[in-house]
Length: 149
Image (cartoon, rainbow, N blue to C red):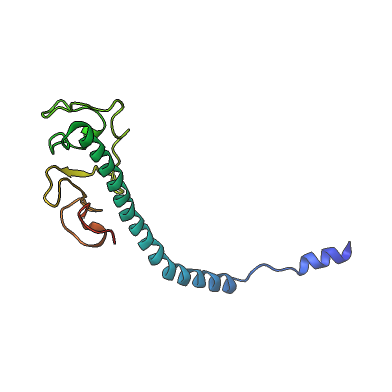
């Protein structure tokens, strides 16, 4: 019993200097790793945009097969969820729609749609993180006419 009490009393915690050294090392590691991890998050958002474009484009193609035309810009992408009452009204709208709901871009805004498009039959695009036309990096516009990077 006496040996156990002496051993317990002999144990010490970390000194303040040791704790500070560990915190400095952790700070350095975080400052090196954080930009890389944050950049990956930005890349993942852009990849999500392109994945959403593919899903929406597929729904648009099926809509066109059923109704002979793409929804107009005025009808918008909402025409993939429920039948539009605007001209041209869909002739053979699929029961349940072509999408259950419209996805939002990674920044929480609806995707924008033009038909006929300026770059193709239809244009799908997002205005990026800032929600303003133009910009660079995360604020750059992302459209279905651009190649995925």
